[in-house]
Image 1 (cartoon, rainbow over the protein chains, first blue to last red):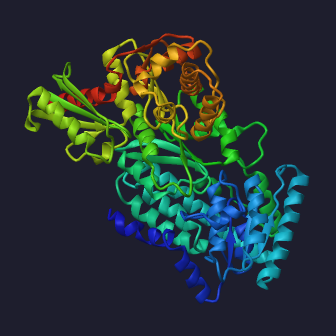
Image 2 (image 1 turned 45 degrees about the vertical axis):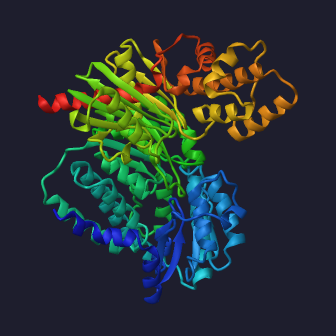
Amino acid sequence: MNKTELFKPFYNLANNPKEIKDRYLKEGKKIVLVAPVYTPEEIAHSMGLVPMGAWGADVEINDAKEYFPTFYCSIAQSLLQLGMNKKYQGVSAVLIPHLCDTLKCLGQNWKAAVEDVPFIPVAYPQNRKADFGIKYTYKVYESVIEALEKATGEKFDEAKLKDSIEVYNAHNDAMRRFAVLCSKHSDVSATDRSAVFKSATFVLKEEHTKMVNDLIDAISKEDEVSDKTKIYTTGILADQKAFLEILDKNNLQIVADDVAAETRQYRTDAEVKDAALQSLSEKWANMDNCSVLYDPKLNRVNYIVEQAKKYDAKGILLVMTKFCDPEEFDYPAIKKACEEANMPLVQVEVDRQTKEYGQAETLIETFKDMLN
Amino acid sequence: MFTLGIDIGSTTSKCVILEDGKRIVTKNLVKRGTGSDGPDIAVKKSLEDAKLSMDDISCIISTGYGRNNFAQANGNKSELSCHARGAFFTDPETKTIIDIGGQDAKVIFLNENGVINNFLMNDKCAAGTGRFLDVMSGILNVDINDLGDYALKSMHPITISSTCTVFAESEVISQLSKGVDIHDLVAGICQSVASRTANLAKRGKISSKIYMSGGVALNKGVRKALSQELNDEINFNPDAQFMGALGASLLAYESLKKNLN
């Protein structure tokens, strides 16, 4: 397989979000930024808007430190920095869910620091499964719709939301199938795999679904390859180039993941039905196994171990985003579950500002030696 | 058959030449680490001592922070894998290895065959590393090699409460200005390193024998404090600083043998 050619379009998208933004604006489309995680993109999509992922970037953080302390999640810090750097000029609004304390502060700081892109909160209820939780989510979505209509001048139509849900379900399906395919093709590098996931956040889902389906068709024609050490990854974000290159250099194959910026967001579909907003609210209720989703039983912990076993991973690489409270809270339980299951686990810290991954490289190399 | 292992750390370069994976022919330490001429000097001195040339060396494995930048190496391995191999070669009863290096501290857990089954690394902070001792020896104007002797003469060790090396520096200066006995201060500093390292080690399953490798293993004060913290004997070898290079040299020999078979 000519991998370079196959993955080139994904790299082009993943590495050039500004060009994509400019293209959409030139085409007369309106863009809404969607901050992590589980932002109801389908609503914006159904209103004819382009939801563009905003997970921060590897930029120097200076002005944003006026609003955040030093020891703070660099996704939030870099996202605010990009806003303050006017990188989102022309964008109609930003949707920021309140799923952790960091994101709550990000929304408030955004309001104060970024004047040209209106902030729209998505104040999800954490008690999401009971009827009252679903009703609450419905109300939250109504307020999001109202704010989006005000910010963009576009109108919401529930019939169109039903169509958008179908578009998003098709994309979820493509991304899930791609992830499974990667478990059977060790010749898809960690860097290539990441480019597919990262690119998904920047373009309209119907465009990306077609690209991923074509990619799946091309890879599926090739023989399966299994010549690397299989690992399972978990965390919020794992798209740092230098970090991914260490995985590739050490012949590590990501056979499945629980990474929020990767497959975590594609696990749950919304039911396609006429009461589309209700369906979207139920989708939120059906989501599970995530550090930012309230779960008194912490089922996520066993989910991670079971998934790692299912895909025959020899170990779990926990990619900890520095200063991420929800992930830090889950770590001791994950560690304990891995010990009980005899599943090797190593934690590597990453953030948006790390340039030198020397110590991460030492950890990962030793982990590989340990697994082999 | 001669193999060479070079451990290029943040502050020193160590080189070991082995014959047939068994006999240490020579070892050298140069007090300059990655990014300097230290690695080249360490290799040159080792070859001279062993009366060998580079052509006599069948395989070179580099390890340590600067392992990727040593062009003559045939391969490289992480320092944890090398310390594990070196320490197990030195004492096959080793189950837990504590390596306090110049910029980080590591704890490695081995099974009965010397294979790593878990490891921990403190990579966030200079407190609890060799760098911490280096900074403190500078403030106290005591040679870093003498810190252990100073600590053992302490009658009333003081407690260093600051977690951060920079704040600990201020704290030590403050204690000095109060006229606190320097031996008590050094003992407190050694205790501080031992306490942080012990807390790291306790996150894993510590089994005897515990073996200390790396330069800080030569510090009697830290060894004594660590022994008290872990309530176990801390074993070490006078060649503790060479365990990484020894392990690299052993792994070089093993890779050759594997290729021959």
